[in-house]
Image 1 (cartoon, helix red, strand yellow):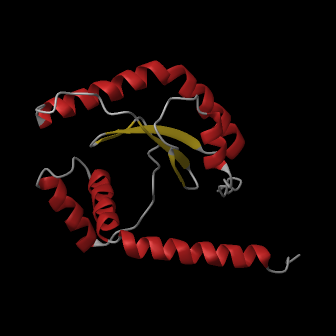
Image 2: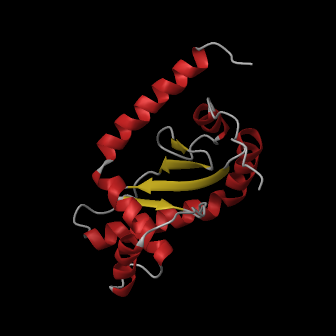
Length: 177
């Protein structure tokens, strides 16, 4: 079985992407999230101007319209930039936007993950499927991971910072032939 090679470092990817974006696409520098498989780029769109007495439903509809229009208007250019980023950093690229209270991620990578679960863990997933929370064990597992991520963000951020420090120490250490 062939071992998957790690992609090249993505140092500077956020800056490169920011520089490649056309002026005026977003109201602030994009949020760029990078892992070993994918680079996700979120940009903030200007909020639609509505009357002060507009309802929450009207605001949500206007934001959805703004998001949809941006997606359609920028499709060709986003594809072109994504191809360049994918070639340079060997990761898939996904795009998303934030507009007011609306956060939308366009089509993104769904990576298969192999795992072995014992019966109690499978029963948790099956309960989520039986209850209609998820359509499959795979979706139920993704739901569980998102839930843990939401409730453990601070701890996960500290762990990522610590791993980054270890990576930096390894990089600065002696080379082993």
